Length: 326
Image 1 (cartoon, one colour):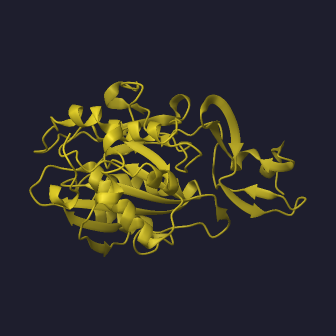
Image 2 (cartoon, rainbow, N blue to C red; image 1 turned 60 degrees about the vertical axis):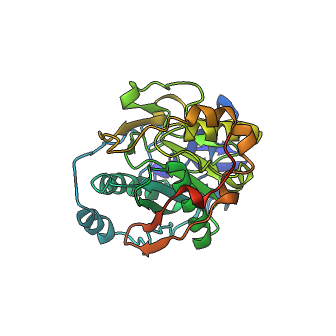
Image 3 (cartoon, rainbow, N blue to C red; image 1 turned 120 degrees about the horizontal axis):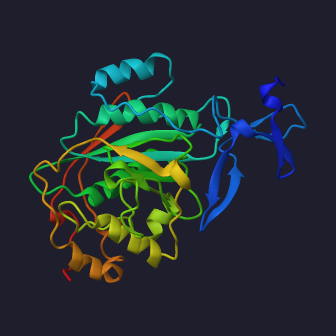
């Protein structure tokens, strides 16, 4: 054991390297922190299970954010040069057993300059976090207003055909995290990762805000019947997801301090309309939860395996998820 590895503390009866752990708040009890293992391997010292993250700094997790434009081809060349990323964007550590298998779901339409920026930034961070992960980009075609929530439902169903994922991260393409201690694993409660966004002056807009980047286990997402499918245009679907989480008996956990800081790539809602019917749907969230979501969705996807992600193309129309109006 070298000098750096001698910095240990006793945790759950085993000696653990402080550099190789993740400090997280304790679910429904913000402020009550604990050290959790994010990757396990055997170590010769008393043969405990050690966690392992290369080049991890427990105290300082701030990372540089480069939002300059880059082509997808350039990102592929850079990331694939010294990495064992598999077709479809699958990666897992070979030196330890990851704590979570994570599917990153990205809803997409007309953001071709944003996706390479996200992949360039996020893939190395997830590798440092020693997660088993893959990216799924769910692309909406057709002329109907953008339906972010339905795209997430499609992405979940398709990703679960690929692998029995433990954890689903619902990630907007224009959200770039600023701290690599914002660990993209799931917990016993749904997780809101993007707590402090620069365009909101790094303040939480309102208590029930659940937008940008969120995470649920596969079991949690199935229990609440996924996202609602009825939100055509932007706005409201995250608030409905918050309601579903509460009705499902969960509370939302969030990272502490500045760990949940994100920058947003500047953009406009290009031709996307604001959904004016969202308030009426939100008033009836509870009644709709069991009839609008994963269980009433039908679709025909086109799935293409790319070098860094799996692309799921789907033409969305309201008839794919019929439900009575309220």
